[in-house]
Length: 310
Image (cartoon, rainbow, N blue to C red; front, side):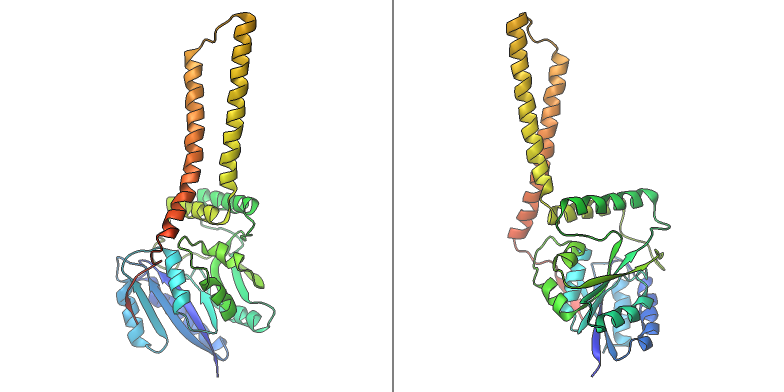
């Protein structure tokens, strides 16, 4: 009996890319020996005709093509989690629908998994060709930063595109947290993992929904989810601010007693007060970010809501 490979494909406003993706993977299928494909397209509240395209694919191949459509946009992380929950395959692969994850790598990934040496075969880009320089700079800065402050290593350039066995999928599904950062979760659960490298590939259709601000917020979520160092930094900054203020007060008193010179300079005093107030607000902002994440977790709201599924 052939193994089943479930392909998880989150979609948001990807009506143009869906038919191209399906055709590209189907062309690779003959190279996947003894494999039955199962597609799970997750429509993340798209505003275009994405759902219509998914319905067409389901009617064309109802045995293998399935979809789940959210009641609204819940984000890519919710789409990934939903796909992993719906997948029934012995092996599961996560892919982007824009073909920036080359389907040509699937046979090699399958071969490495079947060798028994690995539980997961991931991918990473070797360059960021045709990507805006400012985005590339901050992406590299993010990976350098998070690997310094987190105990969970995250590979620079690693994609969500990876093939995993059922044991690893079950481990990921056991993590029911609301605030999800899949790159960190994939690494945190462990298991034997290797990476295939490939140059950056441009999207084949449509436009990306990721802009600089959304990527920045996503990176902050990753740092908060897998590091407590920002809280330590805020505590250290507060401590040094307190010590510095204490030293300054002692010096002012000493100068007044010895030289009889009262402290002057209202502008400098105002600047000092604003500086300390800014530090306090910054530290409160860090603490508030963590409290906000706790607030979302303790409400136990569902990660996503499905409006239609086939």
